[in-house]
Image (cartoon, rainbow, N blue to C red; front, side):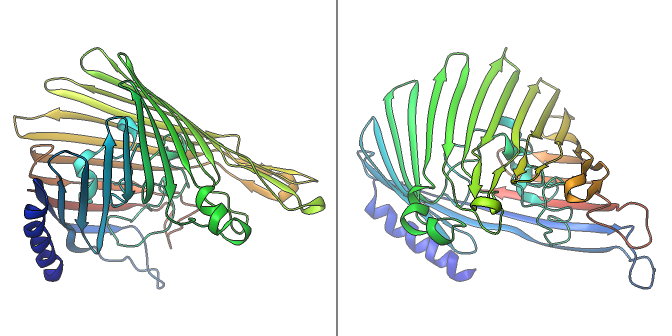
Length: 415
């Protein structure tokens, strides 16, 4: 880490001479779980004692700069490695960019349903971070340090089934023929998750993202096509997809987001082995109300109509639903109380042709936390996390239902 900081200082020193405008910023996040535990029992059927511990969730330095004319520029982030991007703007109507912004993504259309649900508290571990958004979180992702590879606390659901999360790491073109309209085109540096005949040329250009982004007086309308990033072992999680988005304000204090994600069907095999995969269609909504002393955020995502059609039978995916609601109350000018509640539900799955007979199941969480400081500045956070993933997916020895809890605190300082 010392080497990274030295490199950042050197880069900033050089950038100050190379560019007319250069900026250095950083962020430090430390998180400590005062106590954490569960109702889980060990192999001897004995209760497992609570434990504690913490870590530096983030140590980050960022440097950006550009020339006097605003024609060329670049950005670098140092955090467990180095990422960056360079851009060129030869005219007002065109911007060319190469690189990455560290996975945050360009051109995302999620409104309040993604990172903006918890905002800066997302990265501290005091909240549930990406479990219901990015699709890679698990019931213990921010507490235990392990990752089960499931979103929605064991339900494999994600709000990004309905909302586009953004493009990252490749060649990007932003074409703006008029103030209200922008066409965004992204071509990945390499085929992601692609094997066999779709690797290489087909895999790269087949993964192209194309977006039309229209900003009107009443709100934002966007249509995004995300190219096929490859299939493997019958998994079509990365099949091509079309996202439609509407984001609009309602009066001075309310905002509404509506998203639909429609995956393009994928056909594999020939003759008797032919199968057509249809990933579930995602339908989502987000809402925010913010008053002087009280506000509320909510997000929901429904997945329906997923299937695998074989010659002799059709497998239908069960319906899934995510719902998160978070009221927040301003205690004073610097302290705010947030109360996050959420459920993830998967309907019953009875498939006689495939010998499947599964009951409906549900996971939930309850996560009140206090934030002291400014939303976009330094802050102290303390919370209580209580959650139960799907019992069928995460069985616990000697208990009727899995129940986990934690008491985290965190400091989040940017400069």
